[in-house]
Length: 175
Image (cartoon, rainbow, N blue to C red; front, side):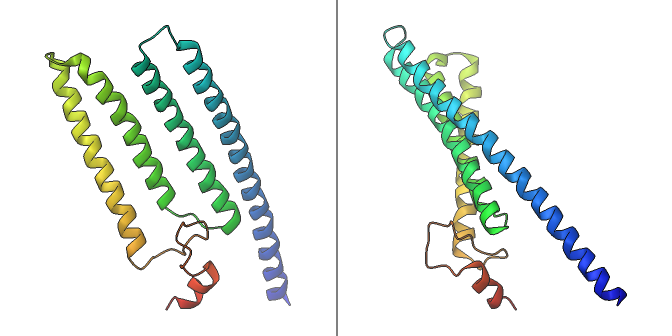
């Protein structure tokens, strides 16, 4: 009888903490959504107010930089949504966020490098571009390996590839 009570207490405790966890995930998703909306609005406002006041190319690069930041926030929201939906944390969306963040920085450094030509800072900019490029390649290779090898974690139903088994099917296939 004590074993039954102990099991029931564990199930209730697990359920209560599951609800708390879901509450935190929802709060994080709401905060990220608000931040994303504000960033998107700022990106457009900043672009429109700078028209005619700044070189057009620099204005476009600033818009692209801001929109890539919005994209990063959007990917984080996607990741939180997948966690809420499936109760599984997958690494791939974080790798994609890393790739986008590195590309975002690459664009900024590349745009600034033309003004640094012939200065000592130009070498630093080239080294940063090389390190960021290497980082993008390593992260992209990691994503490739995760998609092409047997997974140690259940596949996400939010993966773009739809031929992968569901979480339940993946659990059945585990040894």
